[in-house]
Image 1 (tube, rainbow, N blue to C red):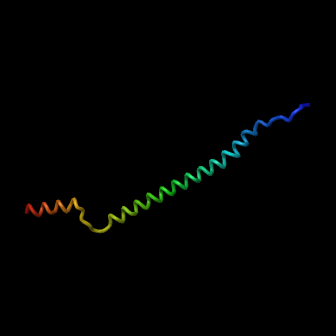
Image 2: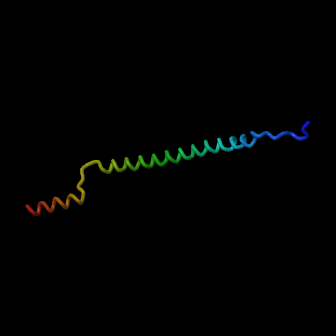
Length: 73
């Protein structure tokens, strides 16, 4: 008869799963949240750029070119 209780070789693997699985899920969710936040920020920037390009306006670069053409005529 064995004098002491045998060690279960699967115990360390079980502990690794108990710690690793929740940590992996939490890490994934936090990363996903950060990515979604950055995506929202990029979408707002693009929307602002689109809104600023709407409408008629004269850029300073083209205004200068028109004035030069008027002087030559």
